[in-house]
Length: 439
Image (cartoon, rainbow, N blue to C red; front, side, top):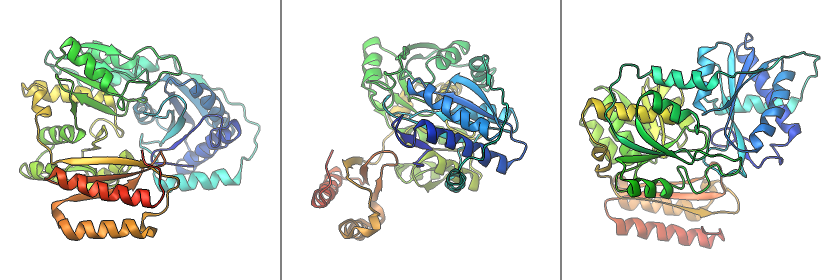
């Protein structure tokens, strides 16, 4: 049921049927009360998909059966729940979103009383509660629609940068017709940032359609056509952000990680990132006395490792950046303003980020029919063994399944592109041999 980050599926089909959604809402409510018996509320935020209302309605029925009040915040980023659950004690959060996927998908992200994504162990507890079924109780619960939620969320972000003098950049932003289509313009306007926003007319079906972080050609063309200093795109629930430079060229997330870490972390600090991150960061940050700690893909894994290592900054090159001094989750608006702040304080242009050199790396995906354990596939085991024997520590290899799609992915980093392509072609042959369907 649970994937990389919560639940993601097709609405009206399992596990997003009305009956199962009620059970999920109930199970999460009981889970939160087991963690803290005083828990009394669950905040709800959602993105702009038409199916979000249906999912919210049925989750709330389950939450009420667990004896908790639902506080509906409306259309807001996932990180709004991190803000509200930490600001108002004894509350959990549920975000209704399928993030960067199109409108045909939807899902649920879960935040605990500390404004953190729940862990894998938490998910197992929730599933156990769900299996036991609902204990019917005759409860009268009065739910709340919080009309001031947009203002409160945007004020919270703006206040974190109060007194900060931002340089006059000319910025373009693609809001993917998603969860932050209202909030981001409010935040940027309050901070007197010169910007133009596109993809701000959601209709329930156009979220991420030919726009957003997975389709950055739209913002790229807009930036070059109108001569902006740089552009950004935010995903459907506004926890990911990607950048393009003045030429419309995509700026790899590793460059953003390197820039933020190099400017906000002190000597002796640790940057937490994933195994997908370019190895050049280890070299660059080591010169500043900053060490790099790597973990599995997923912002939940990054956050867990950050807590373990007392790290204040971590992220992954897909566009999640977590600033623990500010929030316990990634917030695209917060990350954008932080970068503007660092650029302004150091009197830098965005080009300083885009010009950074990375080690060559290629990531390629292949469709698969089923996700077998990689350790049980002899051809893949042999490929990994031979790769490591030949290149040792000079090259980097990562093979993994997508957390949300039926795909297998290979990432190769090396200083020679022809070697990278050679190894990926060898892997592609293995995929074909295993009768997988190639993208």
